[in-house]
Length: 218
Image 1: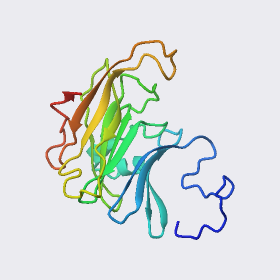
Image 2: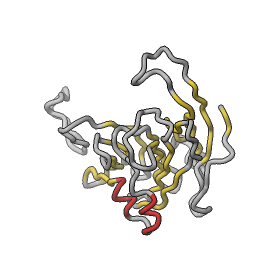
Image 3: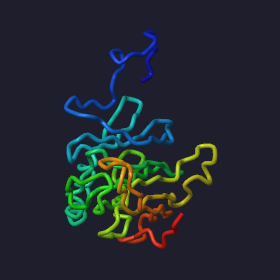
């Protein structure tokens, strides 16, 4: 935070939280560092609209509420994405490109319903945000399948050691499709019926419905 750490070691009592939600847990995804060497990450709380894109600037931490970003779209687009559940501990992945734009993928129910971690209604939604935190584009990047969840996204990570090669044009990403019959909420004795796919994010400006096709089973 730009201050001296005179009181070492750090403890729970001396730390200053970035995200604070006394009513429940805060769940945090991975992070990425922007061109100004400042971190960005997605965090969620148990409320439906409790998802935020957090980033730090020279004057401290700021949160961009994802529900408010959705509302900033043109009316027709805003209405389409108005019911997205961006809280409740979404599986997510965040990265950036060499132009400084931030890429975020979340798995959620398109109709805003609170569902299980691996519910077949889960689809992948992609937020493209500029370096100042303004929404550039929001798209669904998975093709609906009533028998298969699309979740656990993993974006190609930005590599500051190779800025001309990392995330060139549109970043690649992997995701899981299928149903986890054990694990969370189960007895861990069932066989997982899932596949992992490789896709590439749509280039902004190449049409509203730029689905990730074809996809490759990895």
